[in-house]
Each structure stands twice: as structure tokens, then as C-alpha cells.
Image 1 (cartoon, rainbow, N blue to C red):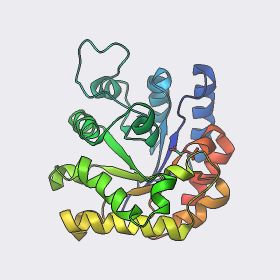
Image 2: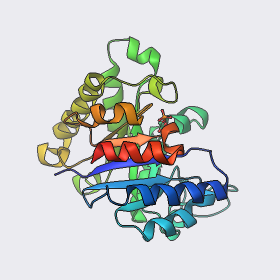
Image 3: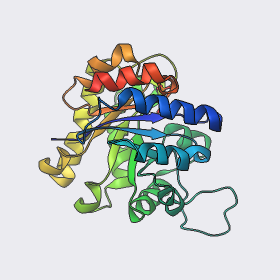
Image 4: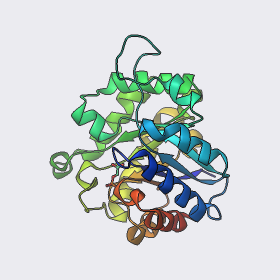
Length: 254
Ligand code: PGA
């Protein structure tokens, strides 16, 4: 059975104190919902990461993750954070290739390959994001476009590496817009991504890789999205900033 994951992407929100309060509230609210097959990952800003990782360590099946890492292991890169540093905080996951990183920080496919390599080398699970813009969705090749994003960054890895990666499909037109992909649109893309993975790595491996949906997931739409056979959880932005709303999304997974 594939692992189910609900990941909270706080983005650049919450002061340190607010973040710790949010993490504590969420952990209290979800502790009876999570299992080893259905976990929660909290991805705060770097400032909060160590403290959130400590809170998560006190709860079963709740983990901490970073929102990004750098493409080098160490050195004179002012302001950057390495995968090794992230792992040293006690975090277990790192989001790689979020569309905001791709767009605002010009991260391309090779940059993302390097980040995935460094994450894995340091024992972190990468949550690799992919997804198409509104303009691409309006054309006829949006499925190929997203499959290519996976292929370009990840298909150089062998199967033993690939099986450690989590995918998140996040249509850019649905991020922070209140527009959500319908469950049919989400299922169509997730199934296509899984088939593409199967074409390269075989069915067995493709069936083990969690593919999360992200883009305006809320408590009110989560159950329907998570009921899709190829949707294995969510990457939640705005709705992860309120403990009750996020906990209700986690309940929808359970
Ligand atoms: P959203 O963000 O839930 O606010 O749409 C999702 C994401 O960007 O990961």
C-alpha cells in the first residue's frame, strides 16, 4: 500500500512564536488521525525548522520538512541552506521544485535534479513538485508537459533512488487562487504521471510512489480529492496556516 501524506507548506508565513503555536496545535489535533501509513509533514520556514522538528519528534507519524535546499553541499553561498543542515535539525523531508521556486528563483530542471540528489544523500525525502500554468492547461499538451517535468529532473535516477521520492502535482492555476482542480482533473493527471513512472520504472515501483495533490486544498474539498485512486494526499498551502482547517484536511485523509 502507498503511504498517504498530508504536507503543510507554510511558505513565508508566521513569526517564530506563531509558528510554534501552530505546530503544537496541529500536532495535538491530528495525533489520533495519523498512522505509519498516513503521516503529516509540517514544512515551516527555516527559522522554525529545528523547533518544529523537535515538536514533531514528540508525536508519532508527524514529521518536519524544509521548503527548499541549496544545490551545493557547503561553502561561500551567503544566505543559502544545505540539505545536510536541514537533516541536522531533525527534519525528514524537503520540498523541491515548488512552482514559486521555479518562477521567482528561476530554478530549472537540472538545478532540481541536483537538489534531489543532495536531499537523498542526506537522508531527506524529497517532495518533488510539478504542475502546469493556466496557459499550458488551455493548450492540448498539458499532460505531456507535466510528465516531462518529472522526466527531465528525475528519470536519470535509477529505481532504487526513484522509490525514495514523493511527487506533488500542483497546477499553478490552482495555487493560492481558490480554484481547485476537480477530482476528475486531479485523477487524470495523477494517473498519467503514474503511467509515465511505470513506463520507465515498471508498475510495481510506480504503484509505490505517493503522488500528492496541491492547489487550494481545503477541508471542504479534501475528502473528494483524496478519494481519487491515484491521489495519495495533499500539499497544502493557505489552509495549513489555520490549525483547525488543516486538522480537518488530515481527518479527510483518514
Ligand atoms: P495553496 O498552496 O494550498 O495555498 O493553493 C499550495 C502550495 O503552493 O503548495
